[in-house]
Length: 336
Image (cartoon, rainbow, N blue to C red):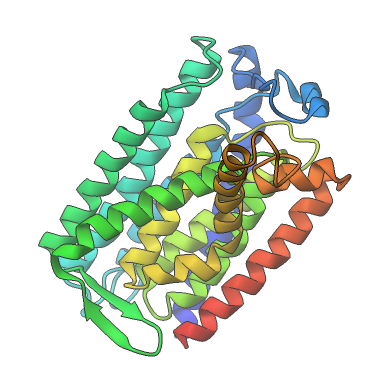
């Protein structure tokens, strides 16, 4: 990575932070006037009732900031840098992967927006049915996987082995991983600042994993900056929630970068918090069914278990973020 690339990434992140923070100031009152308030589920911790009515769908804030700043960075770099934004080593295929990944993330954000809209406007607290949401997610993931397959993007880096061309197996494997990660990030969004902070950490480490790949680095930097700006309004006590709009977008974006740089297996160590949250739900359901109604955790997903143990939301966010950083560090060791 040269100094110019580093400067581009830093400036991109700073601009995304400023834009996201300012958009929060503008949009949160609008969401409040539209009565786009969160309805708290009865199954959650009793003290979450105090969050009732907090504006949701706030993921719009960092999605808009990330997309706008990414496009702006592309245009400025194309004009100002000697080699432009897309270097000689970039091909029509690798450029296609970048844009396909961004569109995939936005598409997941739209699914989340659809879900949030049903919850807050139609007053159906559960939003889309599980089947509707899953089918939409599979369709988006499959479209991305097919684009990667037909443009030769099926080479996957396996630690200690090298690159392996997955061929036709790439399609079902990619769909399974992408849908899994997207739903895992969704489960992580349960307390103030948790999903945003953990995802900010993952984005920063993915940025390091991008190496000299300017395009994906810009995407990571813009996302990290936009998330940081959003967290100004989302830290406890949150003045806005990201909703499914934001959490599904984040999952799609992380997958877009990991698959785009040919390292989807990084999502396992770097996404250790998402994995733990998902496993806690699976294990809770399995244990409940096989023990006649007993519970393995006080409540799932995992962050609620620690809430029930007396941990504050800020403590959970801090500890989970440190765990995410440790997992990301392991991931970087595998990369370099």
